[in-house]
Image 1 (spheres, one colour):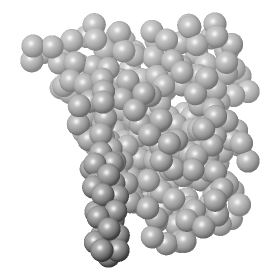
Image 2 (cartoon, helix red, strand yellow):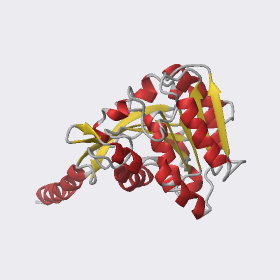
Image 3 (cartoon, helix red, strand yellow):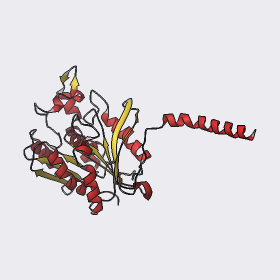
Image 4 (cartoon, one colour):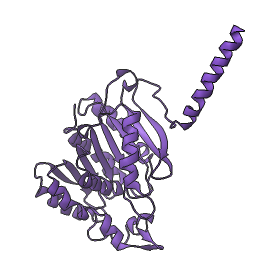
Length: 294
């Protein structure tokens, strides 16, 4: 009789637990005290689908119990959450910089977006990033949840998204880095993927008004009026096929008038390519992490 009662209680508890498990996000806990990159996903209410990301966890994350600053690292047009891992040497770069004491131990989140990190015609990527991804990361992983513990950076379309996020939500980020940012004014060049991307396609045609509506020029005046200055590192290859060195210089000059000591601009050797982004990532990270809570 006692055994049957014990079994009944066990089955009842298991039945109560199973529904909660079925609703849980598919989160993989760290398996090692070494640094590692884990692929994750969660259900995004904004997008109505799973939101995928890779996350870098520093050495001893599993055992330290500490809270860490978090860097959101955005991919370019047509990219995904694996690009920075596969082509950007993120793990090797972060491991080395942390080991040398150049940056503090940190979490790095590399999310996936089908848009240019904006609320375009194809999906509300900006809303999903701000309202779904950031809260999910803060609730799931041991992050410093305040502005002083949050950074954002990206390449090309991800650099464009970075600039927009900083200018629209300066209260959310301690610093940022825009690598070869696709911040074209007034419009993208004819061979830019922005003209063919679903983000800016209306009835199968590129919509220049949507580009203007979503570009940083719509937000920079309000940013300046808020009086919150977010440090920003900007760069471009000197042979960038999209003339981003010019467009990045325009952005830099606009910000330098507002925050002369909190914006940096570099022109480096190279085209619109991974060589530029891999080699400049360490300097960009070193710049940003000056401003995080230690």
